[in-house]
Image 1 (cartoon, rainbow, N blue to C red):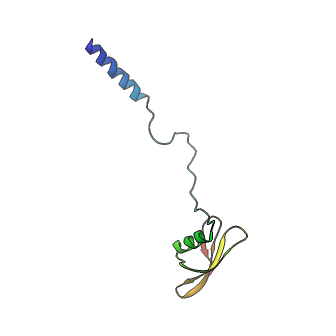
Image 2 (cartoon, helix red, strand yellow):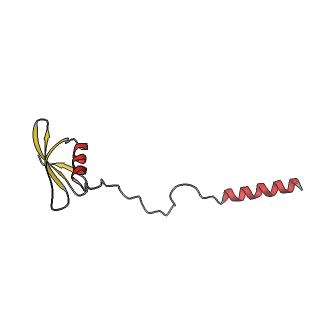
Length: 94
């Protein structure tokens, strides 16, 4: 009887393991979305994003009509105009 019980337990374990699905996304999963930088909502966030992009000395920071930011920034002793668009991308106009 002990042998039969062991065989039954072994059979149940093997059956349960065979039903476990593999880890990872399903085969028919939609493609992963491209992660875009988050827009800066506040003046402090805009200053931080500009500083992280190499513009630590920001002056005259102002909100643009499209929801982005524009500023004057001192870079290498020269003042440049920089824009932070609504997508969170930083661009220098100079």
